[in-house]
Every structure is written in C-alpha cells, then in structure tokens.
Image (cartoon, rainbow, N blue to C red):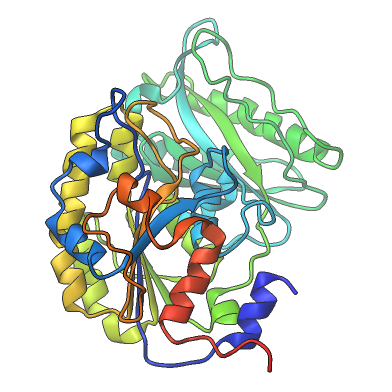
Amino acid sequence: MDMHDLTRNLQTKNDSKIVMIVADGLGGLPMMPGGLTELETAQTPNLNALAARGVQGGSIPVKPGIAPGSGPGHLGLFGYDPLEYVIGRGALEATGIGFELGPKDVAIRGNFCTLGPDGKITDRRAGRISSEESAPLAVKLREVKIPGVEVFVEPVKEHRFVVVLRGEGLGGDVHDTDPQTTGVPPLKPKASKHGSEKTAEVAAEFVTQATKLLAGQPKANGLTLRGFSPRPALPSYDEVYGLKAAAIAVYPMYKGLARLVGMDIVGKAQTLDEQITVMEENWSKYDFFFLHFKYTDSTGEDGNFAAKVKRIEELDAVMPRVTKLNPTVLIVTGDHSTPSFLKSHSWHPVPTLLVSDCCRFDGSTEFSERASRIGGLSQFEAKYLMLLALSNAGRFGKYGA
C-alpha cells in the first residue's frame, strides 16, 4: 500500500482548516563558523510565540544530501514523493499561467536572450527585459507555423515565456538549449531519449523561425528553450486527502505546482499583505490554504544575508493576521534551504513548525535551525508533512482493527 492509498482509506471530513505557509528557501547557514543563520538573526516574536505552542523539526525535501529544485521541494511538502512524481519546468510554467495541458502536449519554458552579431549569447536574460516589453514579442512568436504541429506561445513574466507544442509522437525528453553561460551560441535542441526526436526537430524549426521574427530587437533578439515536459499525472488533493484546497501565490510556477495537484488558484495578490487578505476573504470556502512567499529564496540566491533577514521579519509581521483566523493546523516551512552563504539551493533540512491544539510541545521558544535540530518532529522527509497536518486536523480515521 503506498502513502496515498493509505490517505484515501483513512480520510474523514470535518470543519477543520489547515494553513501551510511556505517561505521559499527558508533555511540558511551562518556567514561564518559559529554564527547565526538568517532565521536566527531575524527578529521574529510572532513565530517564536507560535514555536512555544507547537512542535518543530527539520524537513528533508528529497533525501539527505540532495539539493532540490522548487518543483520537487513543493511536491514533497504537498505529500507527493518527488522521486516518484517528476514534473518538468515547462509543465510548471505552462500550468502556472493557466494553460491547460493536454495528453499530446509538450510544454517548454522559453527565455529571451540577447545575441551578438556572431550569434553568440551576450545576455542570457535579454537585459532583464520588462514584462511590458517582452509580452508583445511572445505574442509575435505565435506567427511560427510548423506543419502537423500546433504551436502555442504565451507570455509569462520579464524574459520568460511558454511554448506548447501539440501533436502526435511528441516526447518530453529534450535537452535544454540554454548553455548556462555567455560568449557561446544557444545549443541545438537534442533528444535525450528515444521517442523525443520529433520534438527536437520541431523545436529546432521553432527556434529558426522565432529568431528571424526577433531579428533587429535591441534586447530580445534570440531565445533559449528549457524544461521540455509533458503534463504529469498527479492525483488531486481532494482525491487523496479529501481537502478542498486553495493556493495563494504570486509567481506563476508555484501556481502551476498547486494547479497540478488540484488546488484552486485564488486571488491576484502581488504582496504578502494582499495574500493574507485573499486568505481572509476565502476562509469559509476552503479546507486547506497554501500560501507561497518567494523572497526568502531570491534574497538567499543573491547572497544578501541582510535582505533575507528583512524578508523573514516581513513574514513574521503578518503572522498575527493568520493566527486571528484560528486555523486548526498552522504550518510554517520552506521547500528547501537557500543559504545566503552558498547563493543557491542546498541540501540542509528546512526548519518546519507545526502548531495545533494537540501538539506534543517540545520545549522550543524560538523558530530557528538550532531549535528545529532538537525539536519534537526531529528530521523527517517532507512527503510525510501532510500526514501530520491531516492527523492534527482530525481528518484521519484509525488504521486497522
């Protein structure tokens, strides 16, 4: 019996409310040995008060020693084994903007880039072109026509756009064309597995036509393609947990992740305060709320320790509005660690706090890496977090006689 067979059999309905706040890249490291992490440095009186009511531990996103991308990191938190369910970046990007992927589709994340006269990349993100500048260019690429294949192009944000190829015999196993550096030309689309050769050929033709359409643009005169992927088959939150779930996120990719597991995307919030307002306005309509906060990750990737501290304090400041709603279960965690010290996602366990009226208090008086190391949840794989959420919400029956 796999985990979701178990949850299907044990799920029960009640009026409980579960809130999962994911501070992307929350976990950190000290900038020097013996120092404090970003979370330990931040002034977090509200999270510390919750720690004194709850139980905490360190969430392992995939396996010990494995640094995950955002997709696997979130799937684990949602209770889907990230080693079993693999979602490509293209599918995430497409579903994140509301594109309904079909069974014959391959989704691709496109990046506008700047090419020099010699065809070599001078800027991988087209000078961080604005969404206002890039969106009309993405729409222009809809002029690409390829016999036997439908081509969809949708703007996303800044230098990013989505391409969806629809047709027979398209596989999703094609290498990225982004060389991850400047001074070289984009790579040619190349199948990584048998069965995706047609996709590589179609992608190459798309690039040829698209590059001609972009010729003469001052910034975005080229493109790279990444994350070729079909729609994954994921059971929904309602099916496996019996939960009507809402997602409140700003960035498209996280909306896409939520949509793939059957959550409703609610509101159009652009700030953390607006996200909390959306949750307040929809409180009576849902059993489960996933709220995503991006900026603890982006500041960590920038290596900006002080800015990440401020973002954590920004999250702490809205917590009274969350607790005022009196959720049955409140979880604060991250999808992975992004230490400013490393400027990248890392493998370190993520501080995770769970608060309910039936917690076994572990003696913690602060929410931090050091407290999570000795907390009552100990270190655990993220895929089990939803089991703890459901049990604390009284949504599981007894297993066995």
